[in-house]
Length: 285
Length: 263
Image (cartoon, rainbow over all chains, first blue to last red; front, top):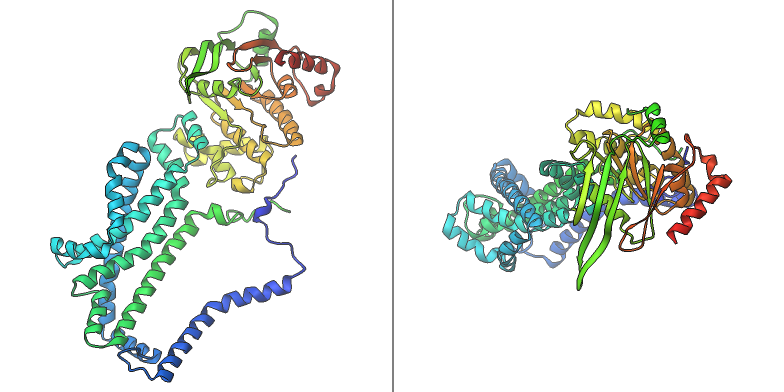
């Protein structure tokens, strides 16, 4: 019987010694985010009071909060948020789907890569803000245009990560699958998808936050609904508090989407982060 | 399992052999290289009997690994012929120099992979894997991911993965090359034990003369590049063998002869 040697990289530092200090640090880490947020609010409030800024330039946190409550209770916020969320979700899905399929083809065929490369690079060289008005002219001010802008902005990072992930599949594992006479479909299911997943999800994480930007850009150009439209309304009426409400809602949306992808990563990539999760096995005992 | 000691003893004593499990004739492998071609293997001819354990020994760069890859169908031969017993390509169990496990699959899931690819239901595959896990002494480590396995344990999982689909031909490409000397010796003994339980036709590439002698019925020695057959050596040690044989005088003499042949 072999003596089992645990992988040292996965072990926590031995107990004792500076345990007391590290416990204190751990508690601090738990509270550091709320503390930093609270501090930012205090500085903001202080700035408004000391400089005596008018509310249409910088509303106080309290004012923004009451505006938020008002927008929430009269249904405005919910209506516009749901529109934007729909655009983001559809755009993210469409962009990811397209990027995954084209990314797979590019990773498989250099010919395909050369065929598409100039357009892909061009699409990245032109800022999306510059072509958004053009898209509105072509496809109208409806939801389709926003979904399209979202999809376009999501497309590239997901595509690049799909290609990189697939190209990084170890050659030796490919040889193994060939020696087992795996079909192309089995290769995809058992080797390529799981092997490319970590890098792919990294791209999705970037794409998820970018899709929020895409939706807002579309709404700022032309819309009658959505959080971008709400920002435009607030600006037009010197209702700066409303602009703040819309911006904070957007930040929250982006954080939520980011969180969803992180959760997805934790679930799908458990083999990377949680060594003994499956059965609570410990090699060291 | 294909355990038939009676047939084996006939094979050992008589020259009347069953049709070979594998026949290689005039095999040459050429790779395109700068300013011409690079000859990895030249005009190689040999055959392997069913349930025979054959080691391929040779200096680095003599095309040993290339040979295994061609036999596994991972590379096409440039010239020559490869024939299998019943005409069709055999089921192959391949063990690589590195364990080559899928990091997202647990130990047992890595072992069941070949069965899943054949469409065997997962529950049944796991049951078969469980037997092998006990045989290779990894009970309790079924649900551990590869990154938490030591080198020796990982390579055992790789061997179990190669064995689970009951392969017609087991190809081992320096399976213990990446292990430390002590673990390597122990793995050699374990493989010997495993083979005596589950007789397979085995072709194993190794750098270790003692490993080759302990395990195999025949040793094929290849020349430096391009690899040609320098010696087809039948190991006269009796079966069943044990670890203790490593330390006998006969073993030492055979080692010296092989060493001389390699040059």
